[in-house]
Length: 151
Ligand SMILES: [Zn+2]
Image (cartoon, rainbow, N blue to C red; front, side, top):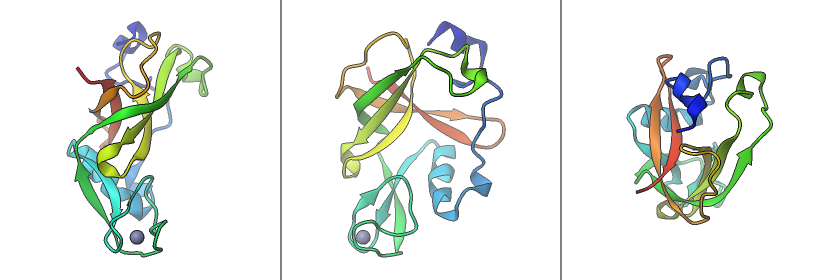
């Protein structure tokens, strides 16, 4: 964990805009509810069985509106990553540098999710490295999905 991150219970510093699952589009609710249970889910079409992420109202493959959520193992592999040096919000100034990863889920049709990679932000994580989800519960009633390199 980065030395600065030890100051906070959470990966992101106080003052960042935070998600409000209750006010998100209804087709996002399944993801937030599952994260709260420390479960990773991916939207899947009940008509053609295609996985998709981020969530949509319609299947991008067959255009069915019959979409559901499928629980998947909360692991993936690093498709790519970026080290963030310049804060996009003033409160992130002390958090830089940090690593953002694009995680591919082979067990879910290869969909990709973006998130923070926990741990030393100055290392170069190997492309293809296995990562596992870390569910960070917030007092405000939501849970963020973060990632760390798997042992
Ligand atoms: Zn479909």
